[in-house]
Image 1 (cartoon, rainbow, N blue to C red):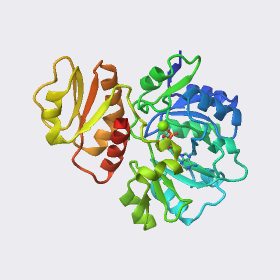
Image 2: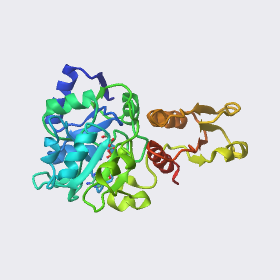
Image 3: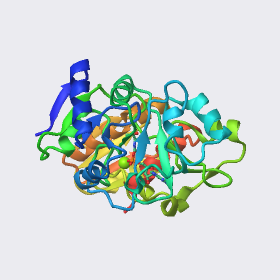
Length: 326
Ligand code: TXA
Ligand code: MG
């Protein structure tokens, strides 16, 4: 069984000792929980891939403190330009990951052999305290089994890794943002958003000028953005608001419904989840709700497609589309 502990000075010291001897530790960030290992230890990074069942070609994000400027990130990058400084000054610590050329000194294992490295400074007091105490970069994917729904509570991490002996999970409560960071590839001209997140395209363009959205072409540039990802095990269908009543009527078996509009009643034997109308709240609730919908025994999850498209909604649509991909 994993060991879940409240994040305290003592448990963070325990986590640091574990990281130093090449073990893996789960910790909270403002986006989702991460499964962390010492970036500079190939053996530790290998443990993350094995535990997660992650494809070996899919590189990891290195987490740094961002304290006192982007010094920690600069050390991992072969090239750190003015744009990086401007973005870090504006958005770090926060849910923005920058993909930049990897420094020679960083072991290729830290990026699955890719010539670039993804870095971000998480905006969470526990992640910050852990990084400060460890005094080095921590590579961490989301702390879920590969392809599944990302974890936004320590209970989600425990559920996914229930069979793992002695995994330390630092509990920092539910994640505030609730969906993974925006991944921005600065090694391309113009820069490309490989994964939309809470730092929106509009906010990035205000600093950088032209920025492209990789959309469906992202996969080649960022293997983690495969079409089916962030997905529950139960089949999930996205339904336009006006088609919802008819789709509910025609569905066979028990349903789990994620809706935004007023609906009659919970379907018989199924479960009804009313989602917030405000995008930050919708994002914060999304993965916990998908996990609950997945666990309620329904044959099908129907999700009412949110009407809005702009800002954070773009990232929400991205995750819903991936969850629905066959
Ligand atoms: O919010 C987050 O980013 C969370 C927390 C824990 O920080 N982490 C996270 O990691 O979502 P992960 O591994 O689940 O997703 C990282 C994404 C993947 O799509 C991966 O392919 C992409 O970032 N990525 C990592 N390094 C890359 C690189 N060098 N070039 C292009 N894409 C990269
Ligand atoms: Mg992930």
